[in-house]
Length: 336
Length: 139
Image 1 (cartoon, each protein chain N blue to C red):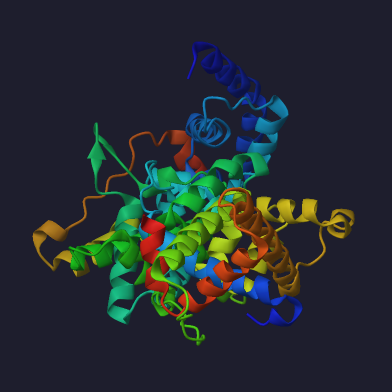
Image 2 (cartoon, rainbow over the protein chains, first blue to last red):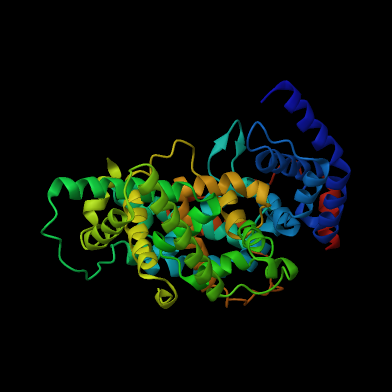
């Protein structure tokens, strides 16, 4: 980061101080016995501003953006987390009362056995309190919570990571891929769906087939690359992560979701009524449009880059369809 | 997927091809992410839709290329959906607060056994000042 950017960053933080003070006062009035000091609160908010608004060296947020960011923080959750990080008894008691049963339910939902679930909850509690001491100070996991998401959502993520760690500890040689697929619902969807398709065209020689296959992989890769990030991510959620349409709809439905904002830009009707519900059928229509877009781009690529005519493009698609019965073939080509 | 009735045959075929390609590509190339994985705070903020479009842009890019983080967000979305009905809020009882040291001692005892090493050495932070104590009494 350039010296000018650092100066600008410090200036924005300085200009946000009065708002930070106001937010602190509100939190303190709600929970005076949490013992969170103003300086600690401001430090946390400053760290979050730097983390989220200055993610890349080119980021240059306005004062309004910084203030909007601060106002989006879930203050009560943050105040509780800061108090817990400081070891405040009352805060820990409230945390335990409000969130322990939820932690246990989530853990039971994710873990393979009740024993594992209890073990994870125990580990999470220890991590939350912090047993590691750095430069004379105990490091609590709570100190990494910014208040940008809800504390329950954050706890779910912490539990998830703890389960992955627990799985890793008991399976030394397991890759990250296998590990994440074996925790939660992922393990249920790890196999390719096999399609019942026709036999191979005996008339076509192997060299021609390989040429078409390579062109097909190159074109599908290119067509996917041309999509924007949101389109790619939603396709990956649907095809690779096996999210159901209703689950994607829920992700997009959150009023503040950046994915929802993207959907709204694509839909004039939704722009007029931004709070309207997003149904599974909306996601389905969006997927259909994306497949059309990918097909168009795929055909153009085969035509312009590989000099294939319409009939040959049809052969590519047909051959690819037949090959879907043996997905490993495309897996091998994709790695080349 | 039950939308095949509205797509022509080539679109249905490209859907199948895309499906195989994405799964294959995800299992081979996408783990080669050079950047660090996203932390819990960022993952949560993204899944809950609490990031602005500008804030989410680098996160979305990361999730496209990092299957590890993407898989976690997908599982968190599933969890969020599964727990959507779970609006039951725990009520705060009026019982005497349990000392955090007691709670953690119990947990550590379960993890390490009932040896002396499991005793949790809790210390109140020194920064507690008299005004805080007074406020505690008031509450």
